[in-house]
Amino acid sequence: MGFLRNICNSTIQISISSRLRQLGLSYAQHYSTPKEAFAAGNTYPFSNENLSSLSLNSRVTKVLQYVGKAVSVTPEVLARAYIHSKVRCHHSLTAVAKRAFGCRWECRVTLALLRQIDQ
Image (cartoon, rainbow, N blue to C red; front, side, top):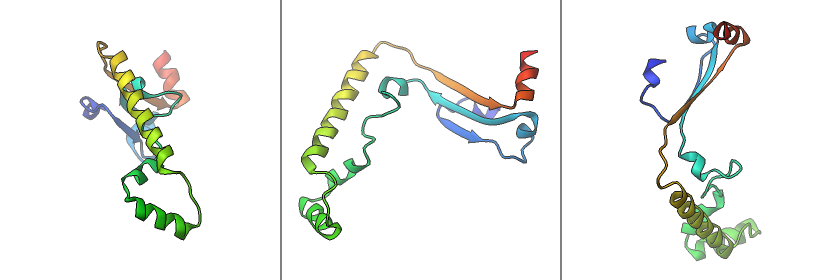
């Protein structure tokens, strides 16, 4: 697993035929801890998939709504969601401005490997 040393965000599902899997490692994940500053109940800013429609011309949006015969979300509501995400990011960054961050490494192992580690 030395090849993961300088990687900070990765998820690796170990292949069933891999030697590591046979030894008991099934999953490894590296992630940077700054993401904790933005996560709120596992929800992240700008994660609303409808926000991308804000970049569309208003006439294109109206045509799509006419063709689809429905209005999913109005541009005004999406604009408020976008602004809310920006404000949330600002508050998060201000709150953690003087913190130090690192990387975490999580692994999932078989019970047999866990018992060996415990010994």
